[in-house]
Image (cartoon, rainbow, N blue to C red):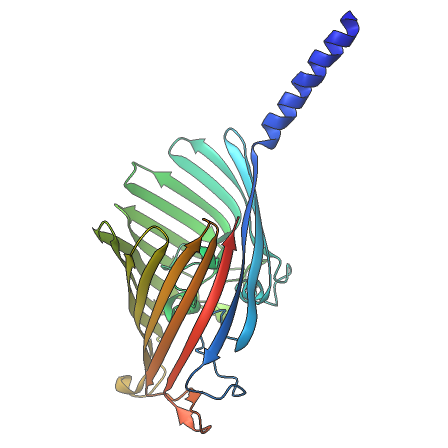
Length: 335
């Protein structure tokens, strides 16, 4: 009887230890799908805005991702698995991991204010991110679409206070997610000041590299229910590149429903003999966001893009056009 009691206590203690270890492992993720209709172009024209991810007409899948995070006392690891068209677009078909691994990294909290991260993580540049649940607008901006999506390398994060932070990184060149084909590397930095972030990235520009980009990302709570997000960036790669700015005013009407507008100006430079001939676009995206039961988000969206010095679209008659508009309905479930 005594042995049985000791075995029972040992068993309960072991189960408690296992449960405690298991509690360090968390699983999260999201699934999204959408329906899109291009208003100013024929359904069979193959038209799209030319920005990342949500490009299909009719019913389409976005992505599904599952994030496994293990947090130890001072160390941890994150594995973010993704599939679907949005996942493939974010990880590239030439990837060794071929649209499966979005993020995979380990980290070490060296001190309470310093953390080292080694592996592959999503970019620190820009206002928007890959996972649609974290964006207010469902479609993506030109600034986000033309910058990097992910980095592979080593970074150090320093939290000097709740309001001041610094990140320094050395990585493979722009979106080279597995190896550095040129034997060269990129440098990155982020300075955070009271919710405003200055981001800098630089590579050699070789082998399709990005070159140099400086980016500002931030925003302000103008009222309790009104937020204004801001993004601006400039990129140069041996005399050519892009620049632009976007504003994200967002109004919360109640706990469940909000409406937001993305107004973006985006231009290319160094692409024409005369600077005035470089193409640029003005894009407006109006998005509603309705939260159902805390996990499901329904997003109706209306978008209109207008280019100058370029006619990348077609109109209803199949003729070249500088304008494209679309209406989209997206559903995103987070868990």
